[in-house]
Image (cartoon, rainbow, N blue to C red; front, side):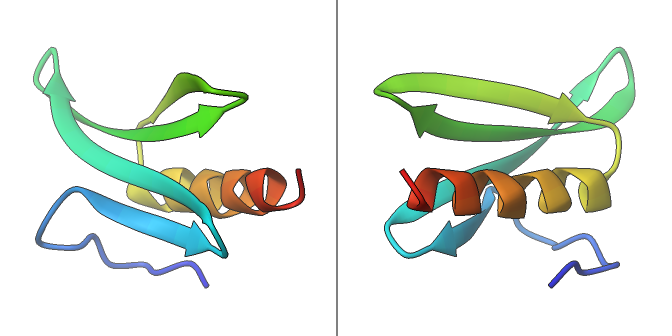
Length: 69
């Protein structure tokens, strides 16, 4: 489920089975960014988004993809 509200505390995360994707909030050049962090094939991956909703959707999809491996 995608939430329309941004959580008060970070990092937050999405879990699907053993798969875990963390969402971090930070500022880049004065703008708020949301960064996903997860391991894929033993390598840490990071992706950045401008809105929490886009980050949350991507985190859910990535957790499902990791779970299916």
